[in-house]
Image (cartoon, rainbow, N blue to C red; front, side):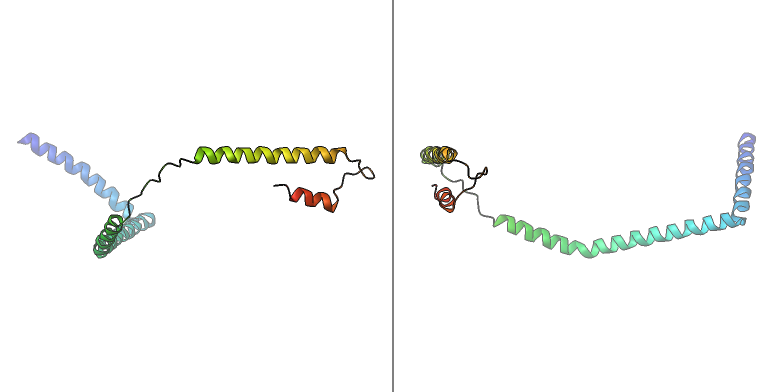
Length: 138
């Protein structure tokens, strides 16, 4: 029993030193400002917590309603039907490549025809007829 009482006395002495240091700190201007700041932060944190809990409680019915509307909208979505494969795709692609080759040949022929003409006064210019011919290549 004496051992327990000695431990209690030692703890009391250690704690009383901390209490004394705390009282001395609070007596200073910096200590008072620190305590006031801690109280202010605690009150703000509590108010924020209470406000967020209250707002969450008010929004719960709206959230449930919006989730129900979303589920209904998703249920009403039409099924995506895949298009049938295009059987004429190869034919259309071949026709397009032929048309492209013909057009490239016409442009190349017209370029060689223009290259054979002499340049006028050292500059190459197109006449209005040449411009019309270019725009009529199809």
